[in-house]
Length: 188
Image (cartoon, rainbow, N blue to C red; front, side):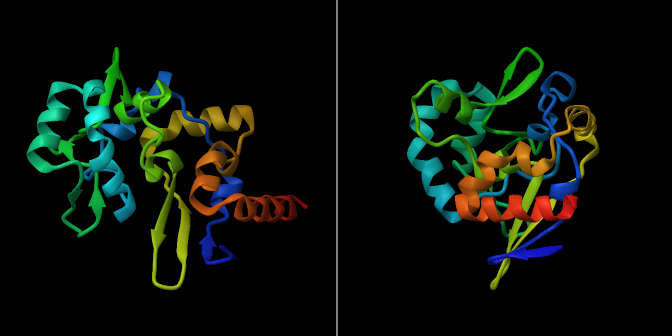
């Protein structure tokens, strides 16, 4: 672990390799698990605002879940998160064949909205936990992502490089530049 500004960062994000391999995992992170994607208060407001534009991209089951639960929910642990369909799929999940994709991201990719998706999804496999004085930035090892770890090793892409855009989105360009310096120092 090392400190970068107001973050405590796990060295795993520098040392572990990762490149999403959708052809192997089929987007399992969007349909497996026991909770929706973590959200910030600001993101709940964004979801409420963009839902009418995202709705045409969603499945009937997702729309029904959102209309019953809201565009976001409070999980059993009190955290804000995306709603689920039958306590499984994220309500915003759509499918391309058997591969789970994000309906929000599809609307973004088509220029309908200007918000890509929740930052927790964009950052994955990094998870950020906010505390009073700092944020913990950790690598989340999940067996469904083993194909991504293998592909990352094959291509020699560390986690922090794979999620560069999301890290910059979350913490800013300066923070990421400092992270790269730490990564170079660790290589020596």
